[in-house]
Image (cartoon, rainbow, N blue to C red):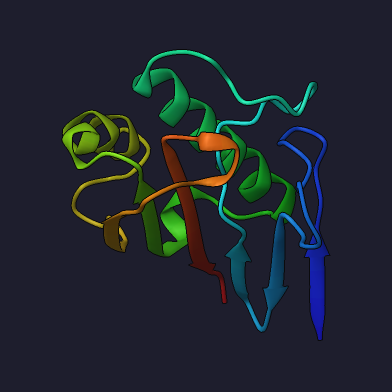
Length: 127
């Protein structure tokens, strides 16, 4: 059985999908971009600001589901410009214990929704 996760502390989906779903202890989040929760608008700012907003949205979803960053087992990061990798990596890394950080891939893509610069999704597990 799947459980749909919704929180107004993260931006609402901009299409026919949910913020996250739990199945058999696994939490799957949809890709999060730097949308502000209240307005639904893309944050205008630096790549650090954008990445921080993405991670705050992810934290809100994890909190709503009863998970923590320490439960994350896999992340996927999509970025519009690989030259931003180290900046994104620095902000992202501040949310994880480096010894137990999740598996991950980072991929440069041609374009992201709303012309965002970074999108992150994850899988977490809690027994």
